[in-house]
Amino acid sequence: MEPSSSSGEADLVLRDANGRYIVVDAKHLKPEDSVAEVRRKLAFGFHQVVRYCEDYNESAGYLVGFDESPRRLHLELDESDGWNYLNLGGKAVYYLGVSIAALPSASRAGRAEEISVTAEDLRARPSNSILDQGQSSIS
Image (cartoon, rainbow, N blue to C red; front, side, top):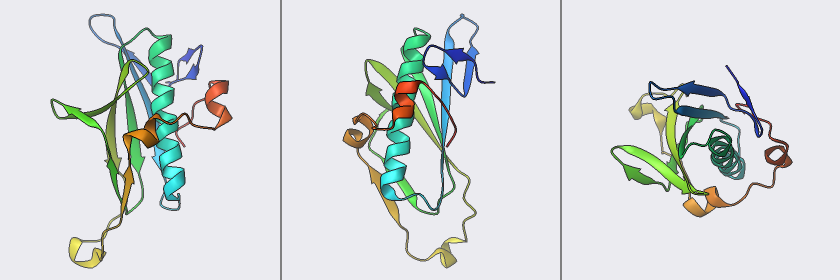
């Protein structure tokens, strides 16, 4: 379900029992994505969620990262009650990372690689013109 708003289509918008909107967008992080591309996709996703929250007049939204890469992803985020989040544009964007990678056992995996993404990386306005066009996709 991708309801339209003035900023485009969030991947999922629900209403809770109190009538508030729950805004969710997702990004797919592929194994072949460069470190720069991973950072760009995540920054783009955080900014998209902020715009959708503005459209629905909500103070918070959610970004789900479906990570298909064997690399470990470390995001520099704040934490509250076990949820990682970034304050951006006056909105709290909660991040949920979901590993969908087919990983070997720890004894066969070899050296672990990590991608670090700073809060500054995530706050940087993405240069991708799609953000300004209000389009959404899971990629």
